Image 1 (cartoon, rainbow, N blue to C red):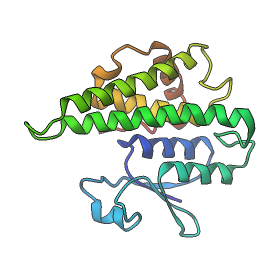
Image 2: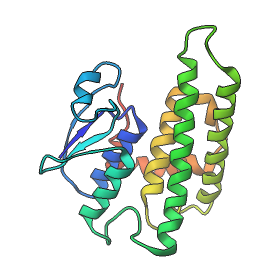
Image 3: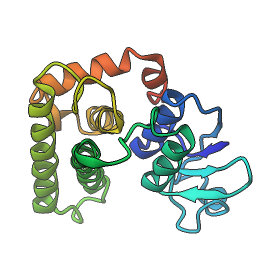
Image 4: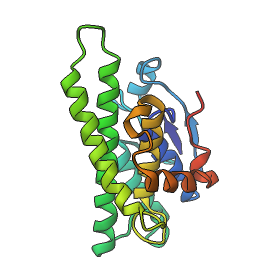
Length: 202
């Protein structure tokens, strides 16, 4: 399999970490949406990452769809999202909070990149507050000292680690010590080579 995109994107990173955790072999083409737009559109007409080229040549786009396919490949005993029932709903709820927080971080960050006079301060503040609220909810889940959804690491943990690390890289003041339990979970997850080795080195 071939993973398209670089791990600066938290959505590419959560895909790379999931591939590692599931023991699925892949190579990576670290294309940048800014510098390699044409190459990326060859895999995804939206020009977005990640995309994943499967062994049979099928191309999957959007990290949610990719991760669902990877869990299917790995089988229910190894999947990072439980296959059914209350356990599945619990993990998916936490994943939704983590994805939502990450998307709001991305939005707030893009506001900082607009030219002077075109930045929407109120919009950035709203997105920042939304991200903080979602991270706070996840921080409460992490207070147990285990993983977010019990004793087993799940996709919720992978996704929030990618999102929180991205936030600390591009908007370090957003978290700024506000979520100690979540930060501790992040550090524990990053100590696992399958996750820690996917941190963006740029």
